[in-house]
Length: 260
Image 1 (cartoon, rainbow, N blue to C red):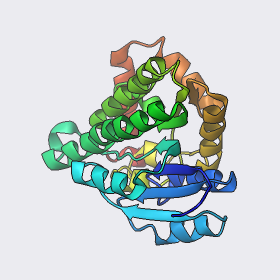
Image 2 (image 1 turned 30 degrees about the vertical axis):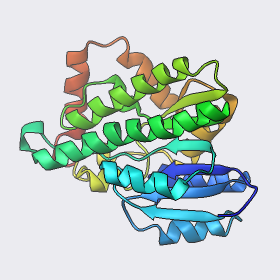
Image 3 (image 1 turned 180 degrees about the vertical axis):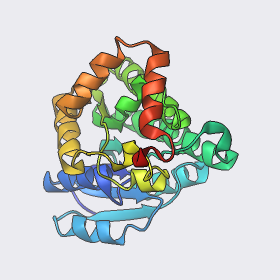
Image 4 (image 1 turned 180 degrees about the horizontal axis):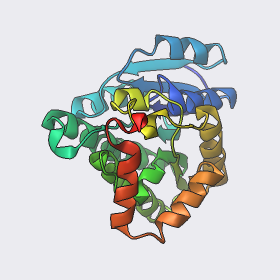
């Protein structure tokens, strides 16, 4: 990729919020390295049509080998913008979930994110410049009955983002955390949540969510909750006992709840 344009790296870019973030970066004049564990041909075509040079990497960032494959695609080129957006959910009761599926959620949302941030963040710190947007979730503010592992990983991500931001505050590198609520993406199908109230309820447009996060990153904001209803939900979560939050989440995420 021989070009003088700056580079943006976007994970979870095949669809949803990740694709919308990649489109915004392309429209702002950045070339792209995009990654996902699904086919990227359609996304790549869309992004090239916006004028970006694109390297697409289909890989599983839940594995060290997958992270290495992505870093190899970036090579020595400086990354100006990093969108750490890859993430998976998993619905159902914890003890009914397969251990391999549980571990994959943890490895994607936590281990892969940490490994990528360590590698790209070090490059940005050496360069004295860079912007990072990590996709957390308002799910990190409440115990997620019937989505217990996912919510716990997002609690980690939300906390991790703000800690790393503080450590990098005098380096020229900014870290922002986008915390969406329920968004209209493939997440619910992949997580097995289509028979729940959570999966069938009203959802935000991923393009709107991406724009909120992208603008917050450019402004250097610490974190941003997408949507006023989600802001209200976070405020209420901070005032509500955890046990009650877990029970309320169960009403929305319990398998079959969409039928009641």
